[in-house]
Length: 303
Image 1 (cartoon, rainbow, N blue to C red):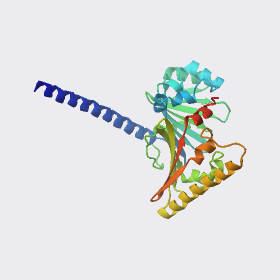
Image 2: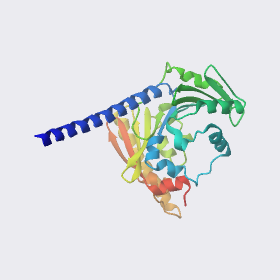
Image 3: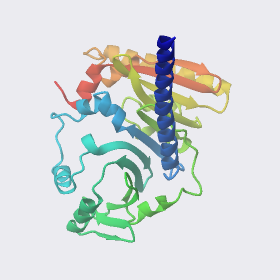
Image 4: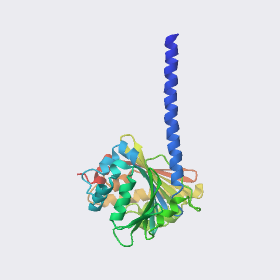
């Protein structure tokens, strides 16, 4: 009887621990949602990077290893402020607008040293908002402390742009918070600018020009990673057409690469794109591309 009681007690304790962990994760997720709501996201592409997850998975060290040359300005910044993204940065939301880029960054900051660095660079801090000029006269940097571990920053032509994040914007497109460590939300306005997409992806972007929105995410998949693209179309008929176009684009890329003198491998972008598979899910189209370690090594500049 005593043994059964101890087993029951141990099982209850384990369940309590699991419940506490689940509650903390739910609370953390809820906090991130409230943070994301402050980002000016209307007609903007929004990037989310979970640096904690990338650090724990060894991906951050891979991409930010010794083979990656650090800018002298960044080295000075680390020395003066004590902030190093490889150690102190936990999560970042970034909204890309034509004239301004907005950041909401969660991490560990020495606010006193950050303000001292701003003043040393000829900037100023007043009413909680710090301003300074960046690497060019038109590159204005502004930021403020939203919470002890949360920094709101903007880089653009307006030296007070960060102030708009003091409150959630009155008009902003809804963005669902995903649990993947890296994801990029693309509005219809961005999808119509296929010429601005990276080389090698423009044909895929061209096919999405009439879509309502798209989300590109990257997450662990076994020993490697997987990129997933979910495109929202106006109806199932347009989704079926888009899925067929993706298949055709992949086939065209394969024909082009076969004519080249070198064969594509999983270590280059072409090899990643050729491995894509697509499926239609009602008015959505989902594409998946496996990403091997060789591609990450090439991306980080490793031989």
